[in-house]
Image (cartoon, rainbow, N blue to C red; front, side, top):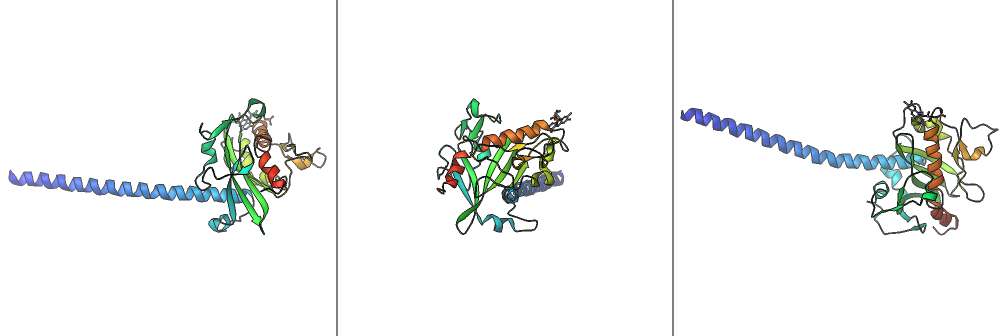
Length: 258
Ligand SMILES: Cc1cc2nc3c(=O)[nH]c(=O)nc-3n(C[C@H](O)[C@H](O)[C@H](O)COP(=O)(O)O)c2cc1C
């Protein structure tokens, strides 16, 4: 009888110890993975930023390349650099849906139907001999199914596109999803955002852009069977490079104030 009792106790102790070890292992793995996932996410974002501006090639060291560019926070309203928030931790995407950190876009200016935008922008600047060479700006736009998030890189003239890429979008592969097609994105390089009066002229064309296309320096090919996505790209560029978007910041860059 006493032997049976001892056996039961041993079984309980072994099973309990096993449970404890397993739960400790699982907790350790979760914590460890969470940190690694966060690091990988950050690294991936840095890669997206650099790739959108053509500042990195396959195989390059992302951290080394990213350390050469400055991250600055810009107050959209004044167009000035601010230290109101920490550039290291600030998340513009999260801020745009946080009532304490965003502003409502006035209906007459909300051409991209975004409703709100963050008060501050997280902007990336690459310099050569202290002079601005590339400005990388976060953009988002509404496609048919999804909100598309990406970066557009401009040259020092604040007008010539140096690169463009979405890092997140949920449009239909083969239709709106062609916004991710490297050939389509490559067309953006060298195109202009603004006309001579700094009015936004950039558009995704309806159909292909040919030598005969009027204002072809402001246009990229339309996305076949995906006019709605293409229009979302166009309107988002109109918004982000207009007066309620990066207009004031870019004005200051042109004036040599930044
Ligand atoms: C299953 C399905 C998926 C579609 N996905 C997209 C899309 O991602 N982007 C888009 O603009 N249109 C998409 N469309 C087509 C739109 O409904 C619409 O017809 C199209 O944008 C019009 O463009 P078009 O004038 O170039 O044909 C999709 C249609 C279907 C049936």
